[in-house]
Structures are given as structure tokens and as C-alpha cells.
Image 1: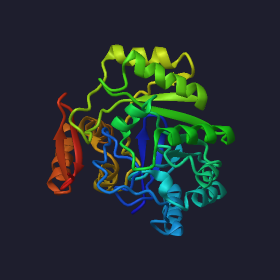
Image 2 (image 1 turned 60 degrees about the horizontal axis):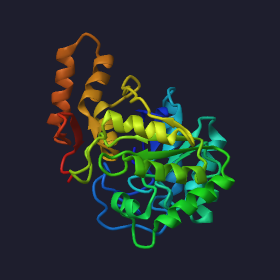
Image 3 (image 1 turned 90 degrees about the vertical axis):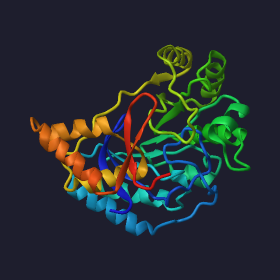
Length: 314
């Protein structure tokens, strides 16, 4: 499928059917930690990049073909809310299934009323808040001209006023950037104004745009949980496990995942172990076949973790 992938295991959303409504990479930000690579050209105008009926048809096909879907999740190759038919798609999904709908977004377009209105029917919205000051926002998120910190925070606050679903704010915690006591206290002050239901601490565990992006220490994570929990419930999601048991075509599934984010080899091996129990030679054979397809290459991080990305991916 062109727009739909999975279901894949999600830290927060169980078995999640991913829906990508954007051409790569279409974004209003150029975050230093982005797993999709650098934003070469900012995209700031909303468009219907692909026919909405085409996307809906793929969603229907995926729902009919899988019994293990916990969420339908809009997660784009960039900023999801740039897709102008997003509200229509959410409404149409609600007509055909009771599976809840989530939208992962950086939140940069929530300052527009039309975007806020389109997201009202989603069951969960997961916007980003990585900084409690304009200076740190510019360093981490590197927004397009005009997408100021003040505009970002205003959009989050205004959305919370009208949205009655689950608002789960994501804070990407980066060592030496926003994990100090002062930086976390600044974020906490903003969260008091936004009033999300929960905050999800996320870590830059996948290959990032900048080599300077580092994982925070255990003490820094504990500090973040302590400071932010004074104003809102904090969740540090445990990584879910990948499930390939309902996959008809392993190579197409791995292609679909790596197009959207790097895939940890250890996670892939664990999924293959479950799919082919007590057959380590067969697992190795599948790994060799996948790599031998020429569609993937591996990237090794400083901590020794190996990730799969599409061949030719910069």
C-alpha cells in the first residue's frame, strides 16, 4: 500500500495502523532529532497531497484484512496536519469502524482554527512541546520563518480549550539541551497553561539529523519525571514489541516501516524469533534475504544499536 502501513507495535498505541498522508519530507520544522532526516525545503501551506478517497480506500482494505488493530494513527512523513483532507478522513473512518483514531503532530498548525476544528473528532492528539523558551525552541525544533514559539504555544492552549479527547503532549528529552532543571521547569510552566491529559517523555533512540543529539542520563530522565509530574501526569512509555504474525509479506512490511522511521535490528530479530520459534537458522536466513534484497542498509549508533533504513537514504 502507498499510504497505509502496519499494524506495527507502538509504545503508546499498541498495534497501530499507520496512515501517512504526506510525500517525504513535508514539514514546518527541521528538528535536530528528526528520524526522517533534514527538512530540505520547508512546507507551510496545507494541501491535499494525495486524493482523500485513495487514502480512505487503503484504510478500509487494511481494516478488513487485519483483526489486530488497536488504533488508526495518522503519522506523516513530516507534519501530519499539512494534509488538508485530514478532518474528512477522520470523519469517514468514524463511519466505518469503532477503532480509535490518533493524530501525531508537532502542533505547529494548531494556531489555525480550521486545523483545530479538523482534529476535534480524533480520540487522541499527540503534539510536541520540546522547549519552555523561544531560544531553546529555535535550537531544537528549527521552525520555518513565521512559525514562532509564541504562535506554537498559543495554538496548543487554544486547542485544549475546544478539544475534549485525549491530549498527550510529547516532550523529546535531549541530553545537554532541555534536560536541565531550569529547562524542565520552563516546560512545566507552559504545561500548566496547556493542561494536557498526560505528558509522554520520548527519547532520541533512533538515528537523528544531528550527531550531537544524545540520550539523556537516567538521572536526567528521573529529574524530568519529577519536575513535570508536579503539573501533569508523566508517562515514560515502555517500548512495545514488533509483531509480524499477521504480516502477509515481511519485506513489504519492513519497507513500509523503514520509509517512516529507522527500524531497530534487535526489534526485527525479536519479531522474527516469535514468528519462527526455535529456528535461529531460519531467522538468520530471513535477515540475509532482507538485506540481500538491496532495499535496506544498516546504521550503527554510538551505543552499538543497529538500525535499518532504506537503501540510498541520506
